[in-house]
Length: 243
View (cartoon, one colour):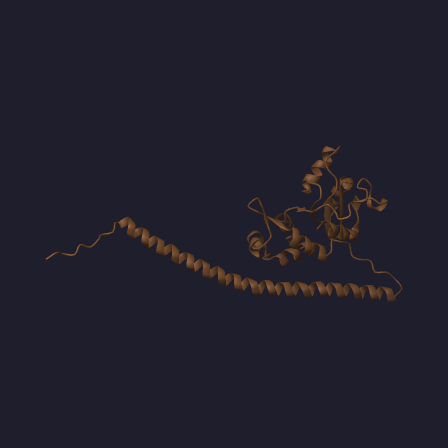
């Protein structure tokens, strides 16, 4: 009578099978957890976007109301001082003073037609006055901020320039500050919130195209019919042409 010979698997092979099973189980659990988290985040993002839309609408209505009241009293309504600036570099490096070059580097404006957001304070205004012939700046509105971030928004993740194609990228970089989606980022920039510095540093300088229709005269100040310097709310028109 012939006895059946059972194939004996080496211990290392058995360990490998067990390890692979454990990995598969861990991977499955991880995917399920990520799916649940994504679903939860979607609801949260939707609610936040709704809340921000209401907030922006309320601000707009309040502004209209204040302007009407001022008009009825025979006066004028003066807008509060802007908290946010958008700066665009409009000139190259020819015959540039080293101090001017250094300031432009500090402002992260290393290339022509690069744009960045800045908080309005005494230090930034002093820096802008020193580089005024090389830049143009003004006060962006919600439409401009939203269009810039959605169309030309890139983030800095692990020192790399990554397109903002997914809310997960924003959450990975700024989740610890409660900023988990593009709408949170827009709100933080627009309102110059408590984590504006972190949100702004996460955003890579915007690489804009040459303005449609061209510039008038970049050597002259905006008030002299040129392009350089402060153009206040008219920056929005320039952003439309460059975005």
